Amino acid sequence: MHILIVRFNLEGLSHDDFIASTDDAAQHWAAIPGLISKHWISNESTNTYGGVYLFESKTDLDAYKESDLCAQLLATPNFVNFEVTDYELIENASCITRAISC
View 1 (spheres, rainbow, N blue to C red):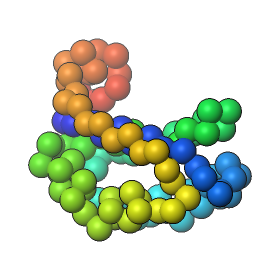
View 2 (cartoon, rainbow, N blue to C red):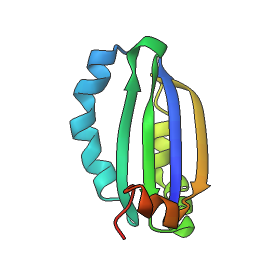
View 3 (tube, rainbow, N blue to C red):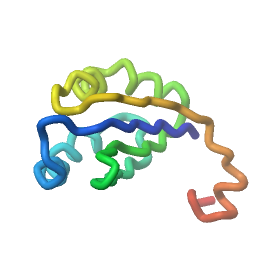
View 4 (cartoon, rainbow, N blue to C red):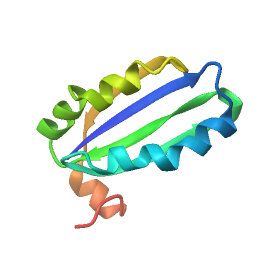
């Protein structure tokens, strides 16, 4: 399994307006092939938002990074200062700590 962490700041969009938009936006991510879960994150005090994605495979993660949906996210004018990092999940330890089902 692989994890993708995406972080960004809001510019010209309030925290409340961003949160209000997430339910509708979530439907698009729910349809991504190979996506096990996406955890939506926000920290209003540091103006940091984003997601922690868990993919079945590196291939699925890479396909998402090349998708139109990802391109649209990165091109959203109200989202700035992106940081996008991917990781391989250490599965056995994650199983022990209940991060994933085993």
